[in-house]
Length: 165
Image (tube, rainbow, N blue to C red; front, side, top):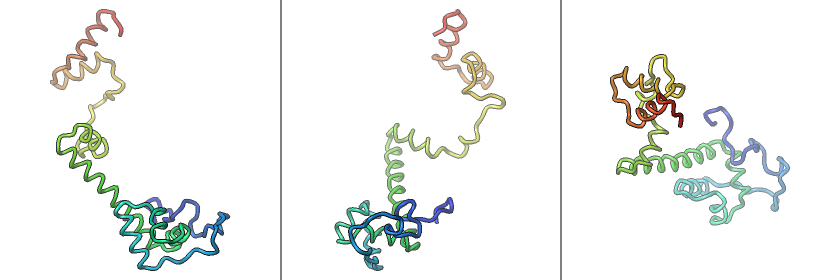
């Protein structure tokens, strides 16, 4: 089962049904059952980045056999989902390593996805910064005892002289 309570299946819409029962024509009579050994081999290759279609070709089995196993065998479907989740975790770990090596784009992307908990709780009382006019924002900086950035000072100065950019 997925977090949202839906069943894990090889293909959306096939929960508990064979392709033939779902009205999908198959060029072979029936799907073969994937043995525990073949399932284990599938999981190993999937966890190393292989696609199910490539594996079916490599192992000499039909894609329908794979779909049937992923649809009918909840344990296999769950292990497949875990293996694919592991791949995502590997990419996230690599992103983190690159960020820690000094890549600003990687740092920014990582922090946008995983902000520190204290960042999620920060807000100025009574002010939504996206709704403030430039002079109001400058006032918020001053009230907080923070220097107003030069770009904002220049913008506020232009607005006070009647020049709107």
